[in-house]
Image (cartoon, rainbow, N blue to C red; front, side, top):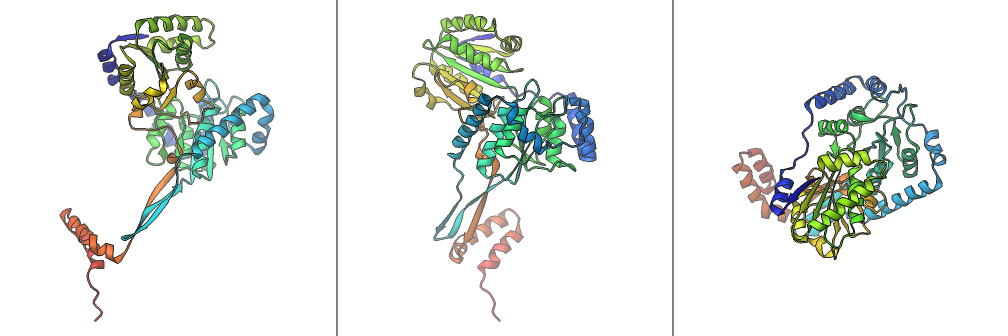
Length: 427
């Protein structure tokens, strides 16, 4: 891991980072895939499924029989864990505000309506392993928001099936459809529609670099929640932190391919203890090769003088996940300005947040936590302002509006206002 000594060096490194630019060759490949799907629909989907997934498909939607059979393919303990996750994620998002308001006043009525999106597509990665938890974290907030039509896309396996874990989640949630589609062609199908795949209003969920580029390219045709990049965790640790916990949290992030684990400590001794513990835990970790690569190629350690300085560094980095392993961690939560999610204390590890804590684990990466939020109910709703003014209100504010319209050179705007202000000629 790269070692940065002092707040100035750490801040410089944190401010310098920027989201990776899309590889131009890869971008051109994705553009070609999207255009092919737009032009040839299902025929293009079949071609890309055979080329990229090694399976020839006639029908893309998973059958009702396969959805019904998914539960029997899972161990009861895993089904129970999934059910617990769904219940907790639903309970968390049901507490998020989503009320409409239409308030009467002397000027008439002013307020807003809240309307759910009509149709949402959830992308479920299934490269190294089926990340079925991502479907929970994407679909449940959409359901709470009131979205009636939710579909999912997941890459098929070599036999044309979709992992039973994904199908079980879809079955429990009662999703409208699960399509056996992955990669950029799945995103194109959701965005533009084909004979078998209906177009959606927004696409959510993480995915490969090809998926992320595809989401970027179809934005505007449909909505997207973010452009999720490689996952990242920043751990703040002082002398009170257990090195075993710090190392475990860093490795939980590092075992993702392309991840960036970052540690900010208040003393050299803390880093030395964590470094030793990292080696011990790597020795018998099944994902040690990927984790070691993440630590060595993208990992950073910043050594500062206080927790206050550590939080300054963390805010500059704006991590997807911020873990506070410090004495009296709750006293520092108020100092957090930029983070996708905050995990407070030794019992609130980020790894648990990936599955059953409650918030969606789809969180902003690449420093975008400076302006973006974790996936939530509002991502699936539209706020529609409502204006209903009285004649008295129009008389009071209309002249100001007409004056501003003429100042901008928009005469028809001014006349539209004044047509209601001028006394009517009854002759």
